[in-house]
Amino acid sequence: AASTSRLVTDRNDVGGAIESFRLLSPRLRNMKKADGANRVLITSSVPNEGKTVVASNLAITLARGSATVLMVNADMRKPGDPGMFGDGGLPGLADWLEDRQPLADILRRFEDGNLWVMPSGTPHQDPGELLQEPAMRRLLDSTKERFHWIIVNSPPINPMIHAHVLAGMTD
Image (cartoon, rainbow, N blue to C red; front, top):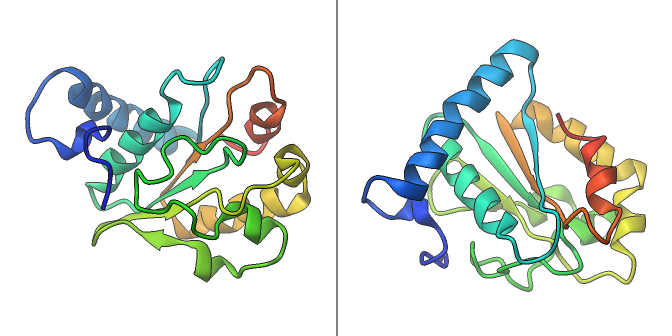
């Protein structure tokens, strides 16, 4: 089960943070219509600014309609709240990039909706090296056809290079 205290989109009330995500969704849909962009990178300047919470809530908001959404946790050093989607400790992105798991085995459907989650997977000594591999670009390119939206939860920009690498692979 999701860690609902961090997922504002699980609450039924109106206003505040929920409305921010509801306003962002149509803007992203307009961007997609204009130039086909569907891969969104969520990052922050430094750790602990809430990027995982933002990425998770955005993914849930987009999936509430008819859109299929893939949330990729690409922060393999510090995956944020690994239990937010009940995916803590499961194989994921790092395992796929190292050719240890097939894609179908690392995608987790969130509840019964249109949201699929790819956990960060087994911790890796040098995740920056994994993210720079051609396999990461292949993953994002191949899933672009399957999902309406791909939300990539990235490590912070400082002090790591990971977000800069992922920025070149997203829209």
